[in-house]
Every structure is written in structure tokens, then in C-alpha cells.
Amino acid sequence: MITDRYKAVVFDFDGTLYPKTSSIALHLVLSDLRHMRWLFYERVSRKELAGQDFQSEDKFYAAHFAKIAQLVDTSVEAVESWYKNKYRQQMLKVLHKYYHKQERVDLVLQKFNECGIRTGCFSDYGDVHNRLKAIGIESGIDYEWGAEEMGALKPAARPFAEIIKALGVQPSEVLMVGDRIDTDGAVARAVGTDFIYIKKNAQDELPEGCGNNFKAMTWSEFANDVLAIEN
Image (cartoon, rainbow, N blue to C red; front, side, top):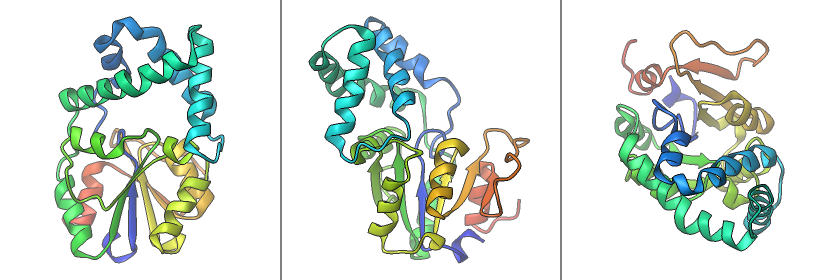
């Protein structure tokens, strides 16, 4: 059982603590058609910067905003204002309207708390606290980290290594739970923690060569394991 093996469990956010039943990118575009190109190039920039370690929040945002500004052909100042004052607020509205926390997530978090297991959410995007609230998680998560605010998007290893150090535990005592093998799984492998891949479909399987510290489960199977319920 998961509760017998770990001192800390760190969750990814998107697609893990809530199911991505529809395209969040499409909802964001429809909520702000005026900035459709900006939204598209924000995703492009994020993919290009993934894994690069800028060491600080300011340096990451400088690179991110400069890349978007170049692709959109506007000023860095305009991009920064849009991102901080418009985009983040639209993200919260879209999450609140269209997405909801996983079934039994509150019971899962409560169980970890009862077992003395610390919990955290490690997301590529910032403003983690408000995004958790937007999907209905208002308590139960002990720690919240945004990779962009730590200066490096997944699969850069340093932020996750710093998280484990801050938790005061060994990597072998931490479980990473996420819905992407190429990002969440990659940081787990790089730092040496176990990883549970939250499958979108019951028939999904891990690619060959992932190793014994990688497992695949649906959210329901994961919840059943934590709550000691027979599948």
C-alpha cells in the first residue's frame, strides 16, 4: 500500500488532481478570442523553454515574455501585463467553470494526513494556491510549488530536488504522482523518486524500459490503494 511506503507524496496539477475531460487550451481561446495568437504562442514558448534551468523566477519570466513578444510582434511589457493581469485570471475562471477535482481526492488527502504523510502540489504553472481553489481543493495540500516561479519548467530536475530537500526526506521516501511520463516521470527519474503515472484510460500502459519505480494506475485505482479499498 502507498500509505506504508512514503513520507511525502507530491502531485502534479493539470490532469492529475483534476481530469482533463476537454481541452483547456480551447476553453482559454474561446474566453479571450482577442488574444488567441498570444495564447497559442504562450504554449509554443513554454514548450521551447521546457527543461531549461533559468535559476530564478525573474530570469524565467524574462525569457518567456521575450519569446512570446517576438512571436506575436509586440512589446515585452505588453506580454507581461497580459500574462499577469489577464491570462492568469482567465485560467482561474476556466478551471472553475469547466474542471473539478478528482473523485475522492479529499478523502485521499485526508488519509495521507492521518498517516502523517506530507502532501504537495508541483505544477509547471504558477499561482498554484488559487488554481487548487478553482477546482475545489481548499485544504489537504501541505505545500504548493510552481515550476515557473522556481525558474525552470519540468523536466528540469533542480526544482524537484529542492522540493525534496525542503521536505527533509530522502528521494526514496517520496512518491511523485502525475499524468505525463515525459515531464512528471522525467523529474522523478532524475531525482530518484518513485512515480505513479495516472492513466487517462484503463488500457494505457507504461512504455518499455521505465523501470520498477514507475507504475501506472487510473485515478480510481490510486484512490482505492490509498484508502485500502479492493479494486
